[in-house]
Image 1 (cartoon, rainbow, N blue to C red):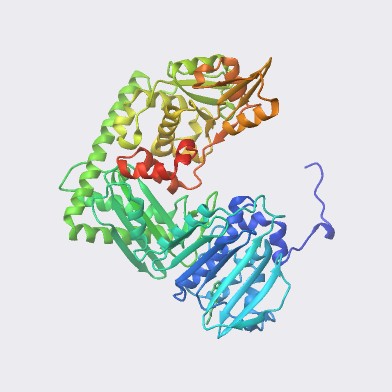
Image 2: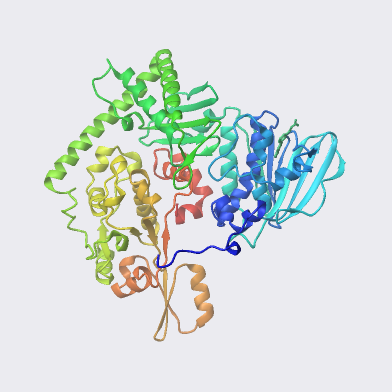
Length: 627
Ligand code: 0RA
């Protein structure tokens, strides 16, 4: 502030059209990481979905090619090819080169526009090395090619065809993106989600790099979606389906309870997964709690909380509205305030009717909520009891915890260590200024199969909650977290992997905010020590061992395979696994909460058969389980 900033004409730059997109790509697609790269495909896909929503398209194919290009083809009406007076260009060229131009044509209906989507396929064009559009319309095939957003050919007629449709083929620009490798599974997940949300539309993905392909097509729409969510659980009634509109807002909901204890509710607005929730989700929750409580009156005098009414609930909420407002950190929170009331009243009315017409289902749902409520009361009593004894007070830390001296959570690390002997090494090896050690004895309770009261009466889990300091579930307070790095450090064997999964299940189901905040990590201890003379080398896996041996030669070499962390002395443990200067730690991320949800249900849930199948199909994933 010493000097007022001065502007001259030279510094004022007018960025026009696609040039602006190439200059500041992150403004249009969020980032130039892998996430942003995949948005290029979603933009093209969204256009075809719009055509499907308008009722003109029933099939879409996404194809990945070996040269790094990708195509999105649909059987819609084809982008109009006539000249637009206003621009002096064909409509195709306008769609491909003008920001946001897509919406101008599709007119009414619900645009898939919000958050990062909906900026238009012109953004895809701008950020591609090249793009070719092919339109089949009025008996002809039209083509045009662009490079870095600029047309390099006219819109030419290249043949004849009886069909109609649009195909866009493009190669993401490697000078813009950190990576240009498109991930089949990421794209397939999104296409499957879109197939569920848009019943009847067939979405196919093929990958000529690997030969893989999948087709998604659900006549049941979001009813199929909840059935899919519950496929490895025990649902106790057919899905409840609600589809009603008010003015220009359409609300679609599918609900199906299962015998488990978790809530799997996913909310969408105009096909966008609103990870951060919003007014449609609030409205749904309010309506459900009220409808269940209304029905419970006369059956029980328990006041049921929202959490009680959502135990074992799987549901999909899909709203379509004309002017969606997306808010929040990742622009995935629906902000339109009017939607809360609309959703609430539509769902409440529909649920009341359903409960009256289906009393046996209603009774089961209420019984389940009453059980949940009783368990919650018991858990509360247990908590109060322990609080009085001091066990859950943040001032009385568990005796097993070797805390650090630093008090700023941002600088503090908590190592959760398996077993007392490894705990001993870690305590001696650590830097006690900022590293705390919590040794856990044996396996912790599997929270996937237990209600809250049982979870909270488990000694190891209580110790962990107290050490972290933030509480759990709806009461979790991120500001009270005592460590911004919570590092799971288990042996590199089957037991270690199991304990890690148990811990991750606990964190994902009951302290999800910690995972979302990026506070949870997995330590990577070495698997081998290689000794030659006085020199020592560490290898973290078999491949690394091979390359070390390759480098130093195999003669006179001693190889030690660590069976557990306890075999390392404190100095070795510090050097290889704990010292921030040398170690590698993996951050646990929930890129796809639905996938993680599935994974924990499968790995830790009741059903044995699907678990076996899953593990057989995903042996390497389960072995490394870095969700
Ligand atoms: C506006 C009008 C019409 C078609 C489309 C847009 C359209 C755009 C895309 C983008 C990808 N696939 C698409 N399919 C259709 C047709 C207007 C008419 O025929 O009357």
